[in-house]
Image 1 (cartoon, rainbow, N blue to C red):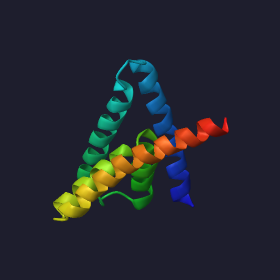
Image 2: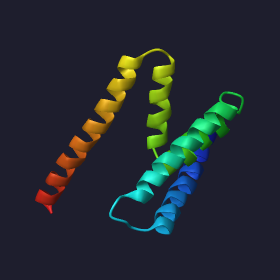
Image 3: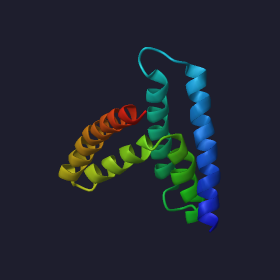
Image 4: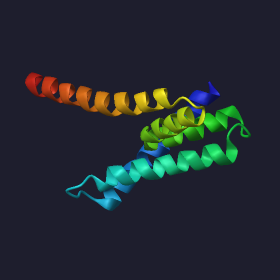
Length: 120
């Protein structure tokens, strides 16, 4: 139960931080704010995994990694998991994860937009 509370608290803080960063960077023709969130979240997750890894209590680690940075950006998890697959020698799964995540995500987002617009 403690893990859920830490994830929830971290998620709320991460989401609020993402919103603040997007507001701070503003709207541009290129989605720079989203890119900045995704890149900084990936950097932070990689840094924290490298620094603390399994040396921190699982509840705190879950709150930081899944809650805070998951609320900030799920792209960070995707990035670190893909790098882990490469480092573990499973390039096929790593490339597959990139291709399916990106192309699959774009495809289902497009389908969702079409369906949502047709129902509106």
